[in-house]
Amino acid sequence: MKYIPDYNDPKILKNYAIWYYSKYFPSINKLKSKLIRKNPDNKVVRVILIELNELFKENEIISSQIRNYFYSWKSEKYIRQKLLLKWFEIEMIEKNLSWVDSSELIENQKKTIINKINSLKDKKSKQSILRNIYTLWYDKNLISEVFGEFLFDDENLINKEFEKLEKTDIPKEKIIQKLISKWFRYDDIKKLFSN
Image (tube, rainbow, N blue to C red):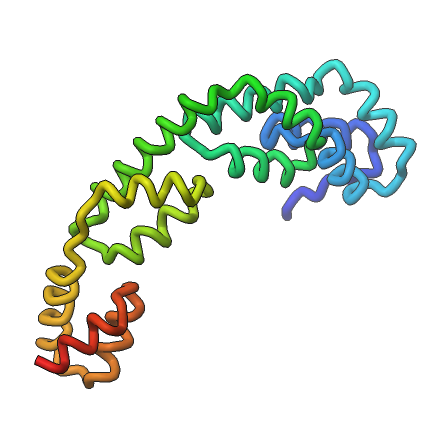
């Protein structure tokens, strides 16, 4: 039989708070919300948060998470959004983001974009790569700048994909659908059938 903790017991709720905090490093507000869902008694939750106050150093957590994201080459927008999702206060986030060297951050982001393009350009269409890179939350102007430095051979890629699909004896409409799903332009696809 599975053990179901009784969160009405303050000791069990406190243990849960420590476990949740050490696993996710949430803001105090997020932790408080989690504890209230487990035990709606505000007094008990408040007492636990006061007892654990020494353990919770929000400023240090924000600073540490920003550094981790920064060294993982995440964008400032991404970092801000992730911390807001953990319910940290925007003022604390902005204060801690001020140490970030934006020129170093931009260089890191450029390297990430270049690596991503190099790893995908012989396998994916330009539009597919672009869509993939936009999910990294980088500045659109930076992405455009880096993309401008590359030559893409979508024509060769689409021809290879078309040849593979043509051998499978599937109808023309299905071939078109599959090529569109790989983010090839419809005008380029039409040219394949006009030859």
